[in-house]
Image 1 (cartoon, rainbow, N blue to C red):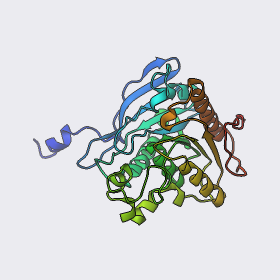
Image 2 (image 1 turned 45 degrees about the horizontal axis):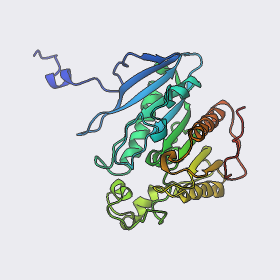
Image 3 (image 1 turned 90 degrees about the horizontal axis):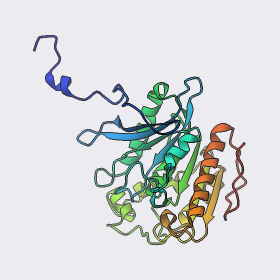
Image 4 (image 1 turned 180 degrees about the vertical axis):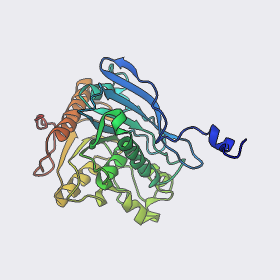
Length: 315
């Protein structure tokens, strides 16, 4: 090694995600490019964090809005490219469908509760959005028009990201059957349980760490400047009681923030027991909401709505 040559340790390490070349794209669906396993963050002593991308045809003059998708799995498990039980057999898949509607889609890893406790997973989502903003010119993406979309535990984290992130602030949030309150007994959840998924997320029973439980509760983070929320929840949910979405809708409404609440009759968690047509309807209305809020200025709704009435049409 010469005096000017860097140490071998520096030579052999993989390039930092901020500078690493993007992997080659694969076009499995017409007009949609897929990039899988793209590193976006490094955690000291942990695994590299990665994301999958579905991109519409690149147009640098007109960057695409972004859907940042956050997977579920009780903060304990799950795959970044899984939108849940009822979409796994779709062809084309849900993310290709979103990309075909003109969005870039980023499905992101985050540290699970066996790896790190809250706020680590929320920090990871912030890091993913920072990386996407940094690499936006290459990806032809406009992160100022980001819709965060999450299901179950991922919906909880997506809610917190929508309510707390400011650089840039998300444009809207689509939240499916997600926890919103880690401080109050609801359905099967009790804050005193030291072994439940909420306790594993926080590192202790929520009742034993009330400040952390409140910080991790979207109902406590609602504010007037929140982006428009669409909350969709089955009224027969046996895992996350639908009162979570009602409580978050009420908190947002009371703060003066725009929110739409759709309670889906007969649906259990993950849209279990909902008809195929019903699941398609939930997806299409959610996508319509996302499109509407990146193509025009959102308007504040008068308050939450319930039932399966059609959402406002795209403008």
